[in-house]
Structure formats: C-alpha cells, structure tokens
Amino acid sequence: MATWSNFGLQDRNSPIIEQLNFFHDHSLLILILVTTLVGYLIFILFFNKLNNRFLLHGQTIEIIWTILPAIVLLFIAFPSLRILYLLDEIRNPSISLKSIGHQWYWRYEYSDFKNIEFDSYIQSYSNLTNKIFRLLDVDNRIILPINNQIRILVTATDVLHSWTVPSLGVKIDANPGRLNQTNFFINRPGLFFGQCSEICGANHSFMPIVIERTPASFFINWIKNFN
Image 1 (cartoon, helix red, strand yellow):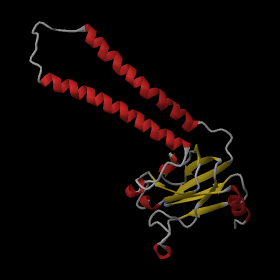
Image 2: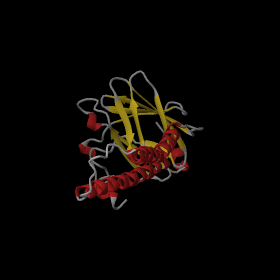
Image 3: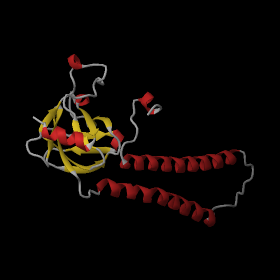
Image 4: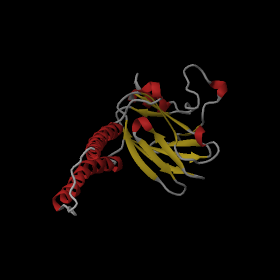
C-alpha cells in the first residue's frame, strides 16, 4: 500500500483483481518481448548492406511470421478467457446486494433481509473530518462481512451509471430497465472506495461508493440494530 498510495490507488483486495493484475503483467511481458524483437530487427535492417534485387518472395519466412504471432496470441487468449469465466461465474452467494443508480446518488437494498435499504450520498463539506476523504466518502457506507461471496445486482432509474470499485476488480454498468449482476469476494477488512465511471450528468463525479468490510459478528450486530 505504501508505494501505490502515493498515486492514489488502493491495493488488490479480492481474488479477481489479483488475477487481473497477474494477467496485466503477463500481457505486458509478452508485449515487451515482441516490441524488443521487432525493434531489434528494424535496427539491424538499417545497418545491413546486403541486398538481392532478384529476391521477390520467401515462403519460409512468411510461414514463420504468420505462425509465431498466432502462437503468441494463444498465450494471451487462454488466460483472458479464464478470467472472463471467473468474472461471470456466480456460485452460492452468501449475500445479495442491490445497487440502484439515481441522479446523483446510490440506493442500496439488502435483498436477503427485510426493510434494510438506504440512500448513499456524498459526504458534505460541513461533516468533513481528518478521518474522511473529500469527494470519496459517503454518509451511509455499504457494510459487508469479510470472507463471504457477495452478489451485487445493479440497475438505474434514470440514466446510465457504472458501479465501480477498482481495488475489487468490479465495474458493472447500471442501465435503466435492465438488471446486471456480478460477484466479488473481499479477503481483507477495511474501507474500499469507488466512483461512478459513467458520464451520467452534471454531478457524475459526485457519486462515490464506499464499502466497509467487517467481521461477521459486527455485520450481524449491524443488521440487528439497523433502523
């Protein structure tokens, strides 16, 4: 966290974002190797004085530079398909959370419990303290238990929104009249921040998302005492 906090980014806090990060490094390594090889060949051609004015084609080299890129693409495609499958797979979620996008705030409903729903607005300047992040904190945070599979259902009532928490690897569009879903699993306690990532209107940048991940006992007490 010490290094990335200087850039305003949070650490990876779910298995999905860890897989996405590994895939990024994997793809970047392949990109560096290909770029280095192509750059080296171009550099060599500039200083190569050999030529053959009767050379019109070379089937062998054409076969090689067709097959090798195809093999390289396979090394990128298979890990990518695996992650896409993991992003869509939802197995026996412990809790279902419904997020509804409004202009310009979020409304949350805990579908597994009765009468637990609330609006989440950006924290006003008058309530800011040293422990609150300006333009990122909200008046009502999402409370979720640690080490549980969470399913989130996302929709909107007016315009397009996007429910996004980068440190969890979650980004899903909120479309009016459509219910989208995804899942995430947080393996560390703490506060996780996100924002609407869709240009949904004048106050688009003032729709923050805050997830407070707590032990199961604290979550149960919060459910019991919710008003």
